[in-house]
Length: 182
Image (tube, rainbow, N blue to C red; front, side, top):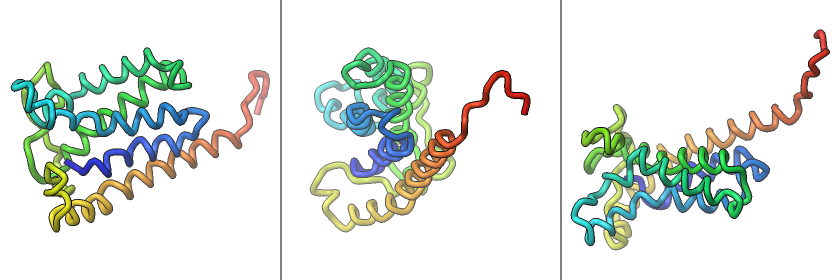
């Protein structure tokens, strides 16, 4: 998996790109938390045998469940229900998709409960992060961070800049009138 330091790149990029009028500060903080949430399976697996890493919590059904909860909490997140739903769905799903781009570990149980197949992306360019703080604070952890600085953060910045550009363009374009013949 990418480290817990890089999963937030996606919500930060989308949130900053779309701006605070679309993604409220509370929704952005929730998105950052949801970008890391699937890795709770590392700890839950110690208590529940049916939960393994990159399993149920990395599935699209889990992402949609988180999105439905966020939609219900939308008023407290200072946003519309549909905005909360789609932002959290995309953000939570991004965790599994990033993990599927790593060069190690088990594949992602992306389509659970419809399939127990585990998936990797065709390109596995991100160094898999070691589990645990002590393992991460090593030479291996530095290699993972270097890989993430190359493969996660630049595309996230590009996404954020593209969304920002689209937002700025949309704000500068006057609305067309129905009776406008041009």
